Image 1 (cartoon, rainbow, N blue to C red):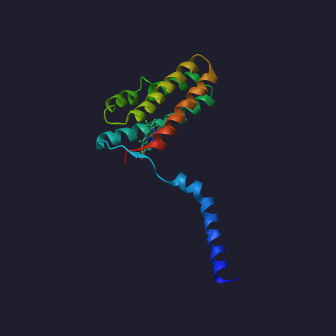
Image 2: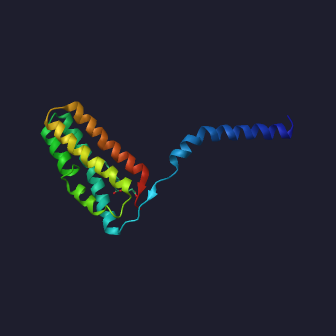
Image 3: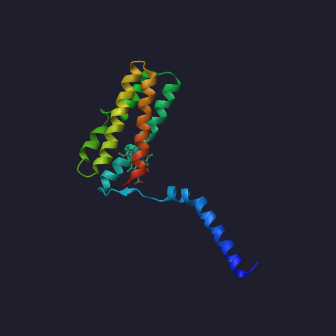
Length: 147
Ligand code: HEC
């Protein structure tokens, strides 16, 4: 095989590997929008976030124990519209992109709907609402960062 053929074969291999890797490269790229916030607010948000994650775990635990009142109370008091996290989000309206705030509102509203449907014993609708809550976590995390 002459040198040019070898080079062409090498190039084809490189291109093949790049094609195989392309989807992963796209996923790994950080395209999140940076939202600059005062330090105190940043810390408050992260603290809320850690609580949101712990809350999801608690909700799932209560659901698997069929303890629906506790599942509803946990969701409403810590992520729902009446939670401190929902009220603090109102202070941030002017500092955060409109869409980011809208995703947050969708999450709080869905958590309250989950609580209502769980209390009413409508578990299909409750699970659907919990799906909307977790989808809101995912879509905000894909779009925004604050540090
Ligand atoms: C409206 C936007 C938004 C929603 C909704 C949202 N988050 Fe976050 N979350 C963020 C941002 C922004 C960060 C910080 C990302 C960064 O800059 O590192 C974050 C960070 C976190 C962290 C890391 C905290 C730390 O101390 O490092 C956890 C855990 C988390 N979120 C959990 C959740 C869970 C669980 C939900 C859903 C129940 C949720 N978040 C919903 C915006 C959101």
